[in-house]
Amino acid sequence: MAGVNGIKEHMEVIGADGVHIGTVDKVDGQRIKLTKADSGQGSHKGHHHFIEGSLVAEIEGNKVRLSANGDVAVTMEEEQ
Figure 1 (cartoon, rainbow, N blue to C red):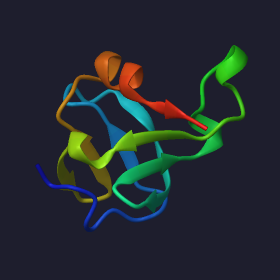
Figure 2: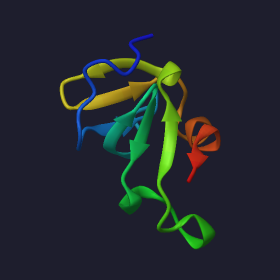
Figure 3: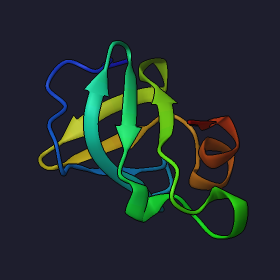
Figure 4: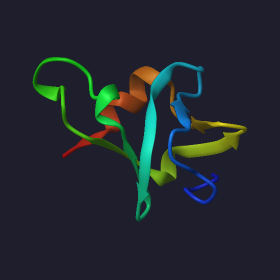
């Protein structure tokens, strides 16, 4: 696990399968805060979502790859 060290604003967050999850707004403690633009639809729209740093598998250039596939990772997001 890579953790949140080295993660910077505007990096793309992708699942283990390469599916786009979101874009980094900032690192908040041990969580990645995603931009509101990637917040989804309906009641999720316009809210920040967070991903636990423990899900980060590696950082590849300008991408943060998670250890979970995209469809699983989005179910683990926290909303604020």
